[in-house]
Length: 449
Image (cartoon, rainbow, N blue to C red; front, side):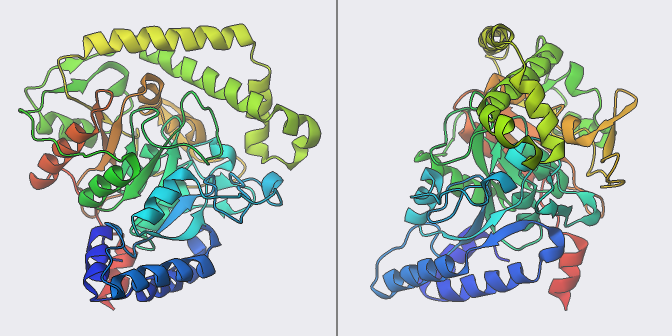
């Protein structure tokens, strides 16, 4: 499928109708069941929205910068008329949402056409998108491997060319991890900078939303639509640093080589208390998730996904004073890191510690090597993303350019409110050939025929 801005340009000029784009997209979605990326196809809604875009074009009215662009959302965004399930059977028959999430409203006002809701780990608790109700989302680059999570359905749908962009959520890395494993751009914004209204929470102290795209230009445009801000940045030469310590442990040699080649003269700095930060992030996540679902656990615990239930029960048992200590530590560490990184615009780090792991034995679950021992991928794929979420910093996951190999990504981490600098940095790296999206081999074969 074409990039979002290319589609919008063609629709606005009248070269193609939004309805034709929508029908093509619906056809693609209907033939992609084996990915387990889609939970609901919203065909009637999509056709109606596309006709409204076409009607505006026919009257000489500009439908917006995303005119006729189809997209999907992780299954935790409110969609008017549908229950918001957050990937769980428990809420499959919940009362329908009375209105769209604020992010969906902003995209609708920009002319985008919502066509589907997308698979996720139940309640966004995991880095794997292994879902008891909808199945395990598979990686378009190798369907024996994970797409990552918890926004795996969103990533897989974009990487497979089913959609030009999709929305996900990121609490501890749930956008950046699947972006790395499927070879996309994925944005975790400055905490609280994009609208969360109308999204099912996981851990509100850490939750954010953001897009997946196969184009940096599309990411730039989506940021402006969703944030209502300009992402233009033409400041002085960007000041970069490489993150050391735990960020260079458990990273691929190719990732470290790419980081070192990008900015060989940039200093390697070590953020303080990173291991403690990750532990505190786990604790906050567990406590807030457990409190959110406490009543449902008391009422119908056996309806939860088994892989989610035990962790939520454990979180519900975390003492309040321990949680408050973790929150206080977060504020202290944010202030300390702000002082120690004040001289830099962009920090470079790996996104995931490895390429997409094999789905493997469903009893054991997918495993990855961390500190020389096999660990559950569902928990530890976020080893490099979780501390950044804890600090509330913006992070743009970018795909390393590595044709013929499984995707793997880097993080460009900015100062609070520094998304524009991240986009400028990524544009420079893309132009220099350090980063770029690689099409899955199966999709290249399909396009060739």
